[in-house]
Length: 456
Image 1 (cartoon, one colour):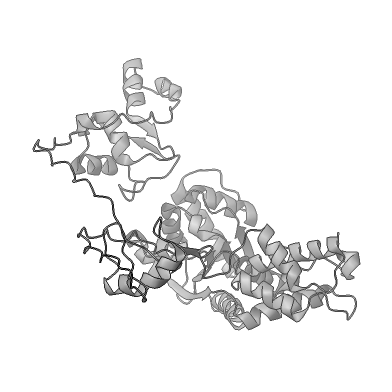
Image 2 (cartoon, rainbow, N blue to C red):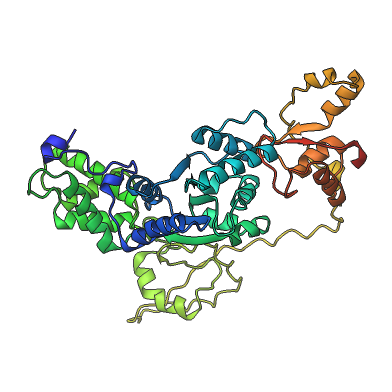
């Protein structure tokens, strides 16, 4: 819309990860070099992390566009929130490998045979996982099986994990410690510095400018940098809205006034602030009284019954300690000869005493006192009646002991639905009956869990 007005060949601040606009800071060069080195040297696992919008996906796309190493077969995983079996199916589809079965062991063996055959022809499979922090723990742990596919000198599969800082916390989980120890190359992207942010804006403008006339004043660029905190995606959103607003007002070059208008419209706050500054005063205390009595209040430690709370800035994140209840000294009697201002005295309402504590004992919570849990997702197990040796009574019994995990479900809650009680040995028995459960405190939505009769 504003391209003709600013004489641009394209929109300079699109939020899509376009490698054509790639601006490499030192840390982006380091991340790109980590991917290139890790894959070229067949290191196995490479991990790139960073906050939302710092350019992780752009780096990944830039690598794919620029890599010229022959023999690399890439599989890009854009939706990592899948089971390991589904992930293997996606890999098979991308590399053109046909396998009729659904058993994971057979699929891994088939993939290993494919990798060895292609390794003899100097070809390597590269698995690129974007938004890896969303991958289930079970799937991440199973990736370690793929990393075990190797020769005596190098890995047969190269895996690049790209994700937000939550990925680092996920890899720090105890059940993933073996996977975490296998990550050979890793780096983290942070926000841009102020100088890099300004150069980033000028770089993208230069990529599309068709004349030498500036689109932004230097002060307008400084204003955008100030409110965006070094996050490239945020810079793109603000700068694109600024250009649109300037086009509406027919202003070129863009001025700081236009930037401030956009910042107000987008309800943005400068990084490091938590909102508008506020002043807090005791009710009924006049401004003049505050100025006169501030020294006396400070000397009293700001701890008076019904006291005064003066804050110039942001209130503390944690609630203040309750005021100490203490009687005020009597105010001096007023006389006709008073030349100096009187000290500030605050009146307070009497604080009612708290009710006496009840002597009744607190009842002990039991399973029977627990609130009823919402019903789990119903499971259609009609085909179980058709299995050999399965009677209708056995089919009905099995239906009662199967549950599909719904959002918000826990293993303890589902066990309580089935058995009417919950304890640690009971949960361990359910876990042993369901080998796919890695951690009894962490089950996955959509997972089918069978509760054994022997646990009753």
